[in-house]
Length: 182
Ligand code: HQG
Image: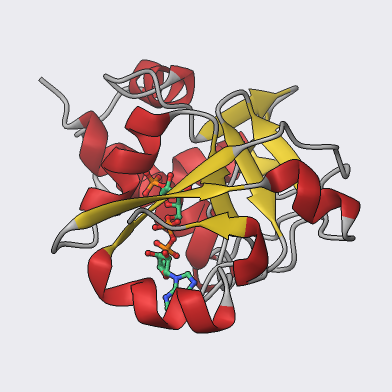
């Protein structure tokens, strides 16, 4: 049984974080020829995966979370980019509220400085409370769900983007637009 999580994490490494180190040149929307990516997969994990496994990872993980898309022979990570070239998206007006899962040890800093993109290119937000909980729990400690008054932030000039159904990206969000749990 192929380890699709391992494949997904390697694709994330290639497409979100280290494209240059693997000789992959992403375009402005993060796309690159899927053949070039598949070559890196078979080089790193010879005989471990079929191309159909890559297609299954693109379709979504066991929870239905979609991290990648494949269009006309070109693949990209939908979000989560860090050290690769700046990825651009069409700006969009967000829904009234969005969620962000984090850990309690970041709260003092977020209350002071708002939500910042940190090592990634954008702040990551979701329409789904369960997804925010899943993301926040990755950071260890007590998981905290922040509610972002996204429409108000948008009206004040914060740009939002919508790379995937459940996912929104934003520029840094001032604390004034964040509701913290009691
Ligand atoms: C925190 C996952 C101190 C922020 C998810 C987060 C996401 C601050 C951490 C994607 C801060 C950054 C990204 C401030 C924010 N001071 N800490 N001012 N502002 N933070 O991993 O959102 O499932 O870069 O709360 O789906 O956790 O892995 O961001 O805890 O889309 O594919 O700084 O990664 O995708 O951590 O996760 P991250 P994230 P996958």
